[in-house]
Length: 159
Image (cartoon, rainbow, N blue to C red; front, side, top):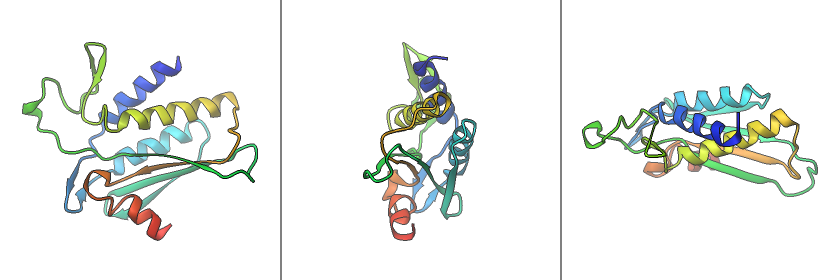
């Protein structure tokens, strides 16, 4: 499978997992966090879910680089999306369909697309034996869409 096809597949699968953030602490990123952990585990990359509140989940993984004395690099994305009213969409907002040569769905451009690119690249690294020049930390955060209280802010305060 080409890297582009892998990105498209992962993006579609991520979109099909509603990880809606309704604000005021109401959200659920658990299923998408579990998908990310599973996707990384398939290629031998260990990842950990950090639950900041009920079903508010962040994922962290570390890839060892060739030179661990070099400063590391953090690649991050968020895994929550804003609500979608299906009546306002011409397609299922959680369908991940390809139409007019584009992937359609909630998160297709913010930011499950980038999450898919990160996952596809590091999966390729793992299957080809590529080791980055420095350590790379992957961080997928909850709650970006509503203040980051349960996402990056929580991770910075507690981990």
